[in-house]
Structure formats: C-alpha cells, structure tokens
Length: 238
Ligand code: ADP
Ligand code: MG
Image (cartoon, rainbow, N blue to C red; front, side, top):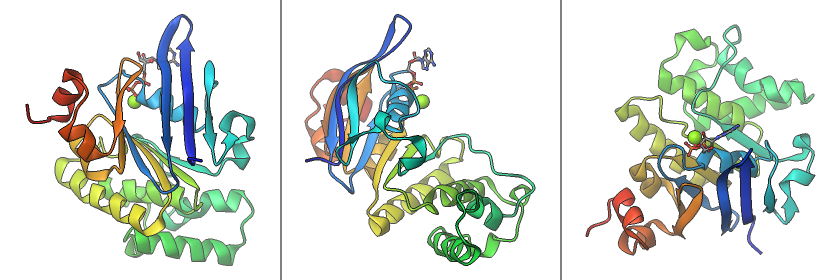
C-alpha cells in the first residue's frame, strides 16, 4: 500500500471544477513535486492533502487514513508557504520553538529540538537575532525550521522559494534536497518551475487545468512526455 494516496479527487468552488479527478500515489519517503502553470490547481491540491479544505469527491489517505477524518491536531503534517510570517518580536530560537511551546513541550526538549534543526539548516549562529536582522534566505530557513522542528510525517511546500533571488533559490534547493535525504520524510512540493521539479523530485505530477497530465519519475517525464503540453512545459528535447 502506498503511503500517500489520492483517489479520484475532485474539488469544485461553486460551479467551477478546479481539480477534475486526480489519482496519484507515492510511497513513504517520496519527494513528490506538483508542477504546472499558474492557476492549474497545485495549491488547491496541496490544501486537500493537508486537510485544510473540504473535498468535493474522492479521497486523500495518508498511511491508510483519510485526512479529512483526522482532527487537525492529529495530522502529522507541516507546511511551508511562499509567504511566511515570522514573529517580529521573537528571536529566531523563539520563532522555531513557538509551536512546541504551544503544545506544552518541556523547555529542555524544545532547546534540543531547536539545536537539532538549526544545525541542519545552518542557522545556529543566528538564534539570538530578530527576523528584521536576517536576509530573505535566512528568514526562509527559519520558516523551514519552524516546520521541521515538529518532525512531521509529511512535509508540504507551496512554492517556498519563489520570493528569493535566483542564486538563493539554487542554494535552498540544494538544502531542501539534502534535508530530504537526511530525514527521509515524505515531501509534497509545489512549484511552477520545471527545473526545480527536475532537481528535487523522485516523482513528478504535471497538472494542467485541474487534470493530471502525467505522473512519473523526472527521467520518464523528461524523456517520454505523453503529450505536447508536457514536452513543452518540461522542456523535453523534440
Ligand atoms: P495554482 O496553485 O496552480 O496556481 P490554485 O490551486 O491556487 O492554482 O487555483 C486553481 C484555480 O482555482 C484558479 O482558477 C483559482 O482562481 C481557483 N481558486 C482557488 N481557490 C479558490 C477559492 N477559494 N474560491 C474560488 N476559486 C478558487
Ligand atoms: Mg499556488
């Protein structure tokens, strides 16, 4: 049985069908990238996986359990968005530990968790700073730290790098890939950038207008695109 299963997933907003019957399944530890042009339904699909919005029909299961049947506090999922807000009056360490504190995790355990993720993200030297004293890339690392510290079963990213400049995007890509290799967590990562998809994914799902065009490994999709749309979008050789 696959770890993350999306079956015949349909999502309508009013009379507009945004996801038109999506089927995807991946094993635990996969790095699934959802790629496609702006407006094709990537963020909507991600929020269905997170259980943040109702499903019109079909289902999403994680570890065999339907996400919409799990209480939000029981979902072992962390999400990193394109626009992330750090708490401006807290230090980096306090920002990272905040979620743990809210859940009643003891101080010594919080400190150990902050030390662990800040070492992974190479922000150990920044722990006493305030967000205003950080660069864009450093802030994004802190936002990731805040999600990572919870040690989630599934990690969801929605275009986390699109506000960063080109050089930083490449650095962060490497960083995210390294984190995945090290942690082995299942990741679902949304981007409209095909190079990012090719670099990061173990599996890619190409979407267009709410329809899954192709699902496969980066090599399969690049070398054997099923149609002209996928070939054009992924920049496959013609
Ligand atoms: P992407 O992330 O691929 O850019 P989205 O999932 O954000 O695309 O949006 C897919 C489509 O669904 C778009 O046409 C968008 O306008 C529409 N949409 C998204 N959220 C809502 C909503 N809450 N109400 C109505 N339409 C929505
Ligand atoms: Mg989006």
